Structure formats: C-alpha cells, structure tokens
Length: 194
Ligand code: IMP
Image (cartoon, rainbow, N blue to C red; front, side, top):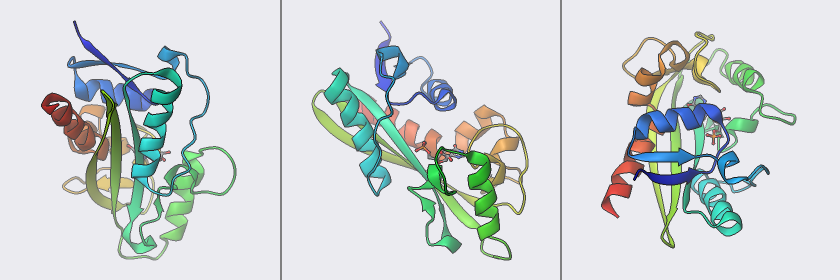
C-alpha cells in the first residue's frame, strides 16, 4: 500500500510540485484533505522556525505525522532580504506576488550585484521525532519580468546555468534544479533512511 503523509499546505502549486517530485513513493495529503482550513501561524524569524511551527501545529491539533516547508528568497545586495518575509515583502495585507516582485525590482534598480538564492527548509515530524532538511538554488534576479509559469518570484529569478527565468521553464525542468526540488530530494533520502 502506498504510504501517505500530510504536507502542511493548501498551496496547490506546491502540492503539485511536491507530488511530482516524490512520484509514487508517497501519496501527499493536503491540509484540506485532513479538514484543516484555518491559517496556521508562521511567526518565527527563521525558515527553520516557521517550518517547525507549521508541522507541530498539524501534529498537535490533528494528530498526523507530517512535513511543512518554508521558503525564502535571499538577495545578497539586500543583506539576505526578503528572506523569511518573502511572502509579505510588499507592505499591506495579503500575499501579493505582483507587488512583491515589483518592490524587489525597484529595490534593485541600478544595483549591479543581482546574485540571490532560494532556500527551502522542510521540517518533518515522524514517529515522535523532529527533523529538518534544506535545499538551495543559486541564481540572479533579472532586470525585468519574463515568463508566465510558476508563482511568486519565478518571473524574476534566473537559476545559475540557465538564461531563462523559472517562470519560463516547464515544471519538470524547474523541479530538477529548484530549492524545493533539492529540499524534497533530501526529504526523500531522509524518509528512506529512518
Ligand atoms: P513559502 O514559505 O513556500 O510559502 O514561500 C514564501 C514566499 O516565497 C512565497 O510567497 C513566494 O513569494 C516565494 N516562493 C516560494 N517558493 C517559490 C518558488 O518556487 N518560486 C518563486 N517564489 C517562491
């Protein structure tokens, strides 16, 4: 029987990416699948802290073993910003990817050093133990948006070794090099070792 694990998210993009990467080794269940419809707090000041917070919430309130991720875009010329605040970079309520991307390009206007990385941390709670793994992709922030695929900062992030943005790549090509892809492959390695 296929093993099942809860992924502490309702982001359909992430669920689809994650299921594609793990293939048929696990069936991934979403928060909606377990009847969790509330916003889970993520108020820590590190990616590790937020990932653990989201995983612990599901374990505590719903009883499921699960994993949760948190991702940040770390731009060198901005001292690592937006980092843990990537979803809420532009002022105001809501997670507005358009506004976040616009603000990022504005803050990098005239800046030569465009190097950046995405970093994903995944926290896993399994059989009463907590684990974390991470995954990184290095790249540069482009000068303007390109492409319509993906989500978030994808239209302005060009991974090292490519001359297109994540938003111009198909999902298999993105997953093969991305932060979440690398973190997920580390998660799979971990799951098969415990
Ligand atoms: P989260 O922790 O995965 O929700 O990510 C926080 C924020 O980082 C998201 O709201 C997006 O703006 C951004 N982000 C995360 N993953 C990606 C990605 O694969 N591409 C582009 N932006 C991303």
